[in-house]
Image 1: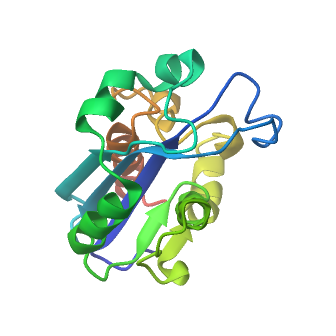
Image 2: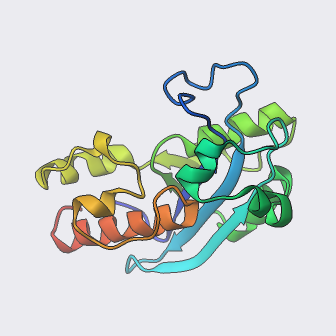
Length: 189
């Protein structure tokens, strides 16, 4: 199913109560990156080379209480440990080499939108970003799991597995890898 090795990537971005439902259409609402997490997955479906960074948002530099509570990412984390999106993408592009990048959704699109918003170069070929959900939908349905009811970091709950906090980019890809491993062990992938 997946060419190996490959990358699992997740992002966290600014949000407010109701912003998802309104598609970030409120005045001054931008879906700005605040965290990027990625892992390289080897041919044995084991994690290699974890990558995580915090990103300082520019248009909305003050995080909402909503996103802080959802992600556990504090204002101090992005202010002190955060780097610019341009710098984050340069480091990420080196870390993930030329591998295909699987995301649970449209993270690649959101990264491109952020680059356009900030007027910076997007250092990836857009086709490298692949939405993994279509590949997981049927195997999860066989397990009686509706993929639309879970975020990438929450799927472990559907299997009764322990996982890191959902809505933390690195935890989310690590949790997602656990699901891929379980599905492969059950002959679903």
